[in-house]
Image 1 (cartoon, rainbow, N blue to C red):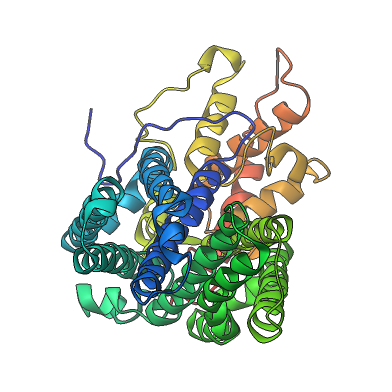
Image 2 (cartoon, one colour):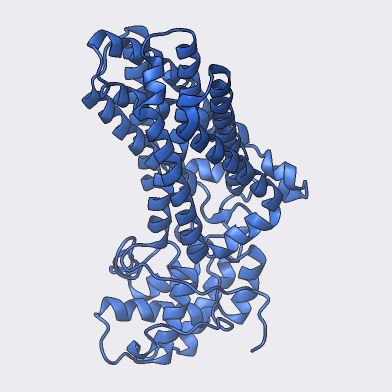
Length: 465
């Protein structure tokens, strides 16, 4: 087999779930737990200082259920982190490869800090009650500091995907790491982590065997940790100001699903922030377990919406200006316009016998290569449903000029035969996958598609910066 300069990877299918939803589901849970582990660690250190200053009941809080909850959080967070790697390498192996090639030493640094976090957390859980005050304080400070440093390093790598900044101009690894969205992202996530720690603390305090007045005193202490929420609108506005113009347009009305996610995240954060800052900090209200749990659920919803916004803002790329969501580079799109999208794809179809013609098999492979990162055939974001009402020529035109059909999609990385094979594949699926299907490859049809492909070119519609 002739080696291909464009790497192809084996892919897995997830039935009616599109691949982005699988990664998103695991990622949201991981981010939520990891951010709580960071905020919870900082809160444990704060309450340990209070305990050593003689504040009543704070030692009971530190040595009780909250400590266990933080332990569970970073254990489950670690497991979901592994799950993130497992799912991502099945869907976006090339994206992960580029990130590791560019930032392997920084990613290794993040893993070192995470290892320190794990060791410190386990040590405090196992030996905390037996240690003297100075050692307890130092151990919790190591845990809190290491967990935040883990966030520091991973934040720069993730932010680089959307805003590579000077790295695109050859600025090197550090230019990519300290990219335009590094600081607003880091500060925003730090505020979120502190808020999650405070909200979970309010839930836990309500489970403690204390008088209401004692619980209220602890809640007032814990709620101070959520004060950074007041600055989250500033960090969010800063983030919006530094991301690429077209990404900002997707979020602010250009893509209604993304705009809705922005609205959900903003509304949930406003409700939480308003209650915490005005009700708990200013008015010093008492919050019961049910209300604290509801606010925590809102925080989970805000986290989920925020992660979808972060992912969606990168479209049509997975690495801005470098790699499209199809795992093709801009230069490779140009090459594949000549060579064909799947000419050198070495992997057979799993259900090849299902298709009655070679053209349909070709179309199925084109769908696998260029579409199924974000679409299914039947299921979430299904192409059959999205194109059901289109005429054949309308579908040919829209697929050929894909980056103009939807500006957040990458240019079609194939030739006229690939377009027609995909069109016929989707038509066949829409018709219920009949046992026979006519071949459509007339010179006139292919010539028209080729004209449309030439007209639109291979450049994306958005600003690569």
